[in-house]
Amino acid sequence: MSGKSRFTPRVERIAVVGAGLSGAVIARELAEAGHEVDVFDIRTHVAGNCHTERDRETGVMVHVYGPHIFHTDDREVWDYVNRFQTFMPYRNRVKTTVKGEVYSLPINLHTINQFFGKAFRPEEARAFIADLADRSISNPQTFEEQALRFVGRELYEAFLKGYTQKQWGCSPAQLPSSILKRLPLRFNYDDNYFFHKHQGMPQHGYTDMVSRILDHANVAVHLETRFLRGRQGDFDHVFYSGPLDGYFDYEFGRLGYRTLDFERFTYDGDYQGCAVMNYADVSVPYTRVTEHKHFSPWEDRTGSVCYREFSRACGVDDVPYYPIRLVEDTEQLARYAARAVEEHSVTFVGRLGTYRYLDMDVTVREALDTARRYLSARAGGERMPAFLHPPVRPHDVPSEQVDLLPLRTEGLRASL
Image (cartoon, rainbow, N blue to C red; front, side, top):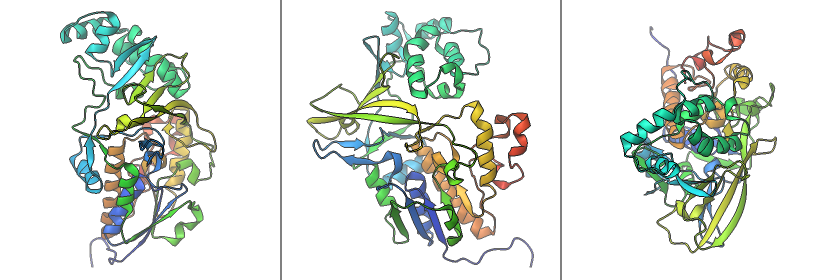
């Protein structure tokens, strides 16, 4: 007999840790393939940080852990989420208050003309901003350098510097330039924050959608249940979407995250006239106010639920939101990545499992790809890697730390 050995098809018992988007999609795909899946989550609800619920007083659909807006150019992902929930049209039009004036974000032609008291046409505005840009910065390394090279000092200090400092808890000069590269600059009057073809909100909320994804005879959901690392031997494979450092009991210390505090208040009427109002001035302690009824514009609600949002360093008992990923975190992260590939039959997925910032559509895409890779690996008698999307790349690690990276393993071959 020649060629690869193949497993005899059989029903496998799979553990999925985390009932957010990553875990739910993986669980559903493997359940539909005939496997038995147990999903574990320490919270009282599914859907992770995109959990939504109706406010009893106002009837408003509240994004409990802050707003989540679905946007993608991936047609398969869009069709997938619409299979479980009807997505209603929604465009994210963000405003920002700077020194008592309200402007449109992202920075666009209206923002530029209003801020500078001009009436530029697109090409005039483009040339004007090019003259403001700091051309002495040829290879921006930090957020601040990227901003100065991108829009010049006046727009940077008005719209980006203070907000970024509050959001990340440090000077923009300490943050990588890649953070700013996510922000658009437009020389027209388009104030749609995202540029993707498909954008919307689930009609009945994300929690309803995730519950429907998990609603399968082969899926058992265990809420308020912590998955203990020693239990992986009870399953054929484990997909872990919890914190990477937490899986190893913080053996090398805690990876850095930012968390959010919400000051919730209600209002009889329309509080601010938009879903998101940023506050760019450092003197204002919160980063933004979100008014949740505006995230469901197809509903007619008299009362309103609002959140003032405060960003701070994530503590031991806090909900982790944004991985910081500063340069000094790289060695620590590389150690955890090396430990992860030593685990048997465990794949780390999602925002927390791979310590990467992921939009929701990317989360769904990676979960679909992960489930399909698992089914393909099993059919071909191959080993499932620890990471399909490694949290670190060799060139991200100082040369003296390269030996920490398990480059010999299948789990870290692909780059991000």
